[in-house]
Image (tube, rainbow, N blue to C red; front, side):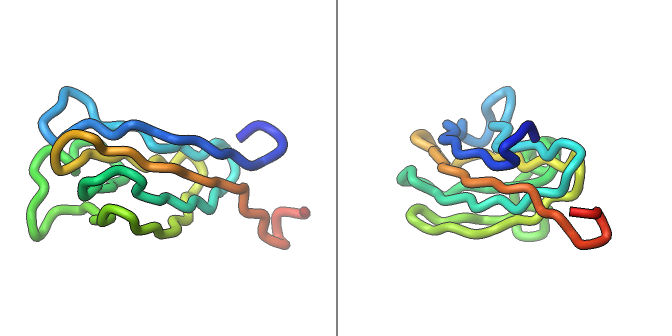
Length: 106
């Protein structure tokens, strides 16, 4: 991320089956802590890779974020969060901050 090492954003999330899921956020060279809040009216599926959202089922590698709920994710450098919605109207709001560990010298 670029200074000031934090970001606020709102992202539209397309329905499952759309050509491309939404890129919610991608970490740069620094780990990130990201709060994702589902501000739309539908369930949002969140994954680290787009291909994980092609067949969402009970054993797929996705996280389910119900409407009105929020959760936090820690991302490694270069790691991404992508999303697809269970129907139209998917929308998430995010707040992200860089994570600095003592061994990073900061």
